[in-house]
Image (cartoon, rainbow, N blue to C red; front, side):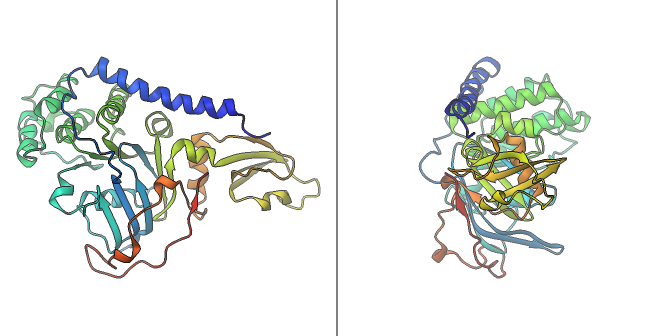
Length: 369
């Protein structure tokens, strides 16, 4: 049994309705916050693009042959185990780190250029703030560091939505309150690309819901591109419409969440009665992961027009898809067409920002249907 049209329509409708909910969230919870137009980023230039990107530290390679493209206007989840290279990738995209090989571009510009930095806001896991400054002084610093890019009203409204007095010292705030102030600095900059490294980990459920609604509202109204790393699968499913999965410094999966789900099937069947191992019909498929429980085998495979053998077939959930790739770090790479990098390899220097050698040949990549 293959997927029914109604199943896929229902799945797409869920994500479409989520887009409509972002507009309602913006209107109901944040009236007047987004009164400035950031400038449409949907001009054909990717918000973020990497081509065989390589970054090494003393302990080894953090990124190797990292290639993908993030179209503008998406809310993208950056998913991977600890040590996969997520923070390193964001550091490179923000211009805080230099690459040892390959190429990376932010809206077509070198991340270390003034033009790119003026369009990017990055909130790291540590959320660095000066504890001796008041909230008002912190926002004033944001204005002075971002001349021509700062919107004071947006920043102050986000702070006041949390009932935080502007005269309060940052050092007296709770972890969640400091996160709110740090996010106010990011949003006040009015970025075209907002990068958040585990931004919601220390927030209570109510504030987490508020902030995720705000992120969705930004993307819906202004086309702001959001790249956020997260280990919370429910958060990813509710907020993000684009995925980039990193394992061992490589991009294993990238593209629209719906397209990636539609490119896979879950097969459930019985083990052979002769105890000869997995069913031979599995060999005809690209198997991402297979698991055996008793006499039943469950496998996540790349979707085929025809499934060989006797299997129950269903569409994977986002959790099933992500966990399978995270548990199978050597799975073949899959990028949807929109995630295929378009940086021209002939124009690529061997080490654009920080010296070193190129990271080697490109890996084979498939296209999602």
